[in-house]
Each structure stands twice: as structure tokens, then as C-alpha cells.
Length: 226
Image (tube, rainbow, N blue to C red):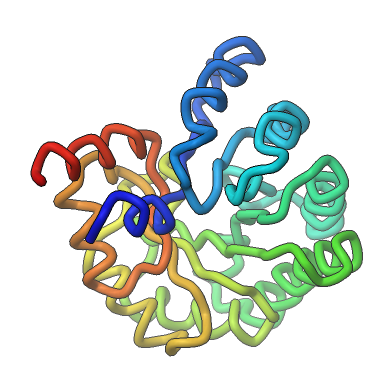
């Protein structure tokens, strides 16, 4: 795999709570021309990202209901709409983990569908929704069920983790998710992916995106490897 191909798998990510406008703008500038699929930033950095990424092929991404997923559905949908209006082409939402664990499948589906519909209306159908499962809290069966609910609700992607939960992504998570959603829905591995070997393992397992704060370092490692 060459550098450009690998870059198109990566959502370069800055979601740490201490990153302000100055740090965010500098970080976006460094990442701007790397060819990443998306740059994922905290909601208040979206206007900066939209401005700095204009004219590139890299999408602006942000998060809704993050990182715990238990905000009211209406708030989650409104937040997602606003992110699209600020310039997001992709919204990574956290599903309601507690509802999933209690078997409230209809609630989980409706929660996701509200965000999907809100994003579709705001973008004219152009923007994507990724559903974060937070797999560290889930059994294999829960992961499979969550994926199927996300697909039924119209999500474009399922995603492993926020990076703030009990653990990050695993190869096993990705394998279960890919088997559950088939080939037409994206799978994003995120959380704890800091090096080239881990990123490649996730892609080999079926990930179509890899979320990482170390995207530039991963690309540099590929170049050094030759």
C-alpha cells in the first residue's frame, strides 16, 4: 500500500478536551495536505476546519452526543444538524449505550434514525453518519446487534470507539462489525490506533476507515518502511 492509498483510509483526529483554537488551527494546517479521508475535530473547531480544508478532498468530520451517548435524542439530532450547517460532511454520533445494554432496540434505532434524518435534511443527503458503538462496554453479541440496528436506522458507517471508553478498537471488533454490516456499510476502527502495524491490521480485518490522532506519524512510518 502506498502513502496516498493509506491516507484515504485515515480520519485524522483531534478530540482531546485541551485543544483550543490556536492549537487546532495549527494542527489542521499540518494535516491539511496529507490526503486524509477526513479530519475529525471537536464541534467548536468545525468552522476553522471548514475554512482551512476548503478546496481539498479531505472532509470535515465532528462528533455528536460525544463521548457518552446518553443525551436526549432531540439534542443529538439538533447538534448533528448544526454541525452540518457549520461545514461537516461527516458526523460521528455515539449511540445510547445504556439503552442498547438494556435491550431497548427500538429506542436505539429511533435515536440513530433521528440523527440520520437530521443530517440528511441539513445536507440534502450529501453528509454521512457514523455510529459509535463503544465496543469496550459490549459483548460480541451486543456489537453484532448494535451494527444491525445502525444499518436498519440508515447509518452509513459503524465505528468502534470514542477513545474515551474502557478500551479502544480491536481486530475482533472490526471482524464482528464487518460480518454484521456486509460490504455496503463502512466500518471505522478508532481508539488506541497509534502505529502503522495496528492501522494495517484493522484494515486487513475489514475497516474502511481508521480514526487516529497520529495519522501523520503513521504515514511517515510507511514511508520509512519503504
